[in-house]
Length: 456
Ligand code: 5AD
Ligand code: SF4
Image (cartoon, rainbow, N blue to C red; front, side, top):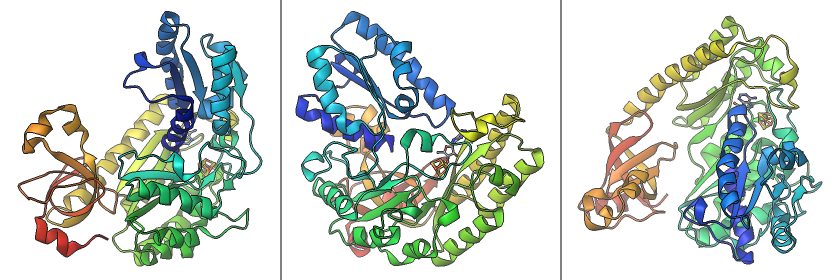
């Protein structure tokens, strides 16, 4: 979501003459778009601003702003704490950013805007129209379909910093995706804190209806979405994995804990049994669907027995991948006031157990793919390839490409001696021959194989 917002921020500033610089040192304007989801993310903001203060001392004309969730949460206090800061703008102020920057340029004033919008048709973001999605050269893109969250999980800061849930109109979403497709994007990820409740409050179409409409966009090859709350993952949406052709076979379904007692205290509104039933139904509808999850280790009052239930749930589900975090108190979130916090070393130990167990399943799933042929949407040259600079221009051997399977697994491969050039945005068949800890390696099939596989 922050990647999407950052793109909107830079697009919104382009009409003022700003463009992205290759280094911080070269910039006239530095904006930190921040995340407050966990304590660690928030700490990063302050270390970053420390680095920037040196630049500001050297060049007082430099404009420095902080946006996003930490800005929303701290507001005016950030200006007090960080003397070299010119601007604090919250999660709903991105649309007003160009005006604010204009004022700072002319008046050299300091500004704070953490106002929240009441309706999503107020321009939350600058440039929702097509002219503002220029050719990024990317094969994949994000589109926010809804803002905010009304769920109030007790550990979570999102409802406080992103505000009430609001869905965008389907026609605006479709228009934005079509513009992305015109710029070369072939895979779109629809973003929302809880996509299952898309459009409900506003009486728009359902999320699965939206998926069917996106499915019809010509030249778009793949659709993903995130995130889905298990409590209201509907049968209708599960069926979309069978019925919506372009929908990728992967769902991120954060469980957070395997213990009913903890799930209740987290206000998640589902039980371990209810969650497992949804997993079972998903696999009945789409047998090779990949499932990933988020997990919190050491939520207040989590006993070893509770934690064991989480490990047991992981053994039952066998996730394809997992994001696991140590619980941290967040301002305003109810759990910050819960007694019986778990000591830091115990949280760390539990986190490590989660990661170790998951490494076993990730490796098992990746190994099982060796020998199979996967459709891979090519995203571009892999980072390794970019980091060796111009050498990939002179020798085929350095053409290390990267892409993803429908099940969201990263596949790296080398061009080979095929005369058909590989291009970002194509789906090509790749024979998997190695499984690494977090990615796969393979060989693209030759021309005939590619044609036989078609485009889908
Ligand atoms: N502590 C630890 N992890 C958290 N998350 C959200 N809030 C907290 C917190 N206070 C995790 C959840 C969520 C993911 C985005 O971040 O697992 O799904
Ligand atoms: Fe946070 Fe829960 Fe909303 Fe997700 S559903 S953003 S965890 S409050």
